[in-house]
Image (spheres, rainbow, N blue to C red):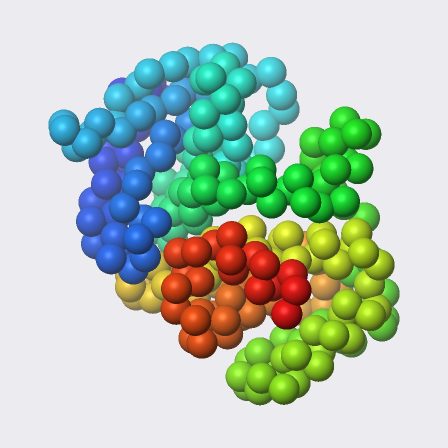
Length: 257
């Protein structure tokens, strides 16, 4: 497809945003969308005055692009600006479009406090020293460790029932079970991906779609923290609604409670 052929798809993002923007204040902003196809990045920016996207940059992809890419990261050829980076199949269905808004939430996290928070984490600092820029995806977390698996299962169940005492007790058990870097990694994923899933599921509910609760089945994996984080965030926001926008404070609650 030629870039012009995506205009209808990109316009759909704007239409859906109008329907869901009052779900959360972070949905007010429309970030650049980079479509990766035919060996190139095609970067589109939203013009609020004309209420449409415009192609502003084409750049050859210098890395292997996975199928069904859904990501948010700064683009070095685009002045390191953050963008929602996707492959064209993100436009296949209304459900797929929710991934665009999931990634927009990550763009917001990046702009507000992501780098500041990473600088506090040993797990991130050590990865940077090693030149390991894929640590968020490939960190060797002990998901299949039986002690961890049982503790996290109890934690998920406590959140499901909204049992505050059990939630705090289970969190303490996880802190005692995991090493410092493993615990940091867990919290990072719960905050970053859990918050995006929390908003994504509110979007899905508004659009009449089935909520996304993947990651609950064993063996656990990184996606488990998406669900655990979303549940924990909902637990906190029910008590302190301001944490839904004060996301640095939200991270601190998740790390230290």
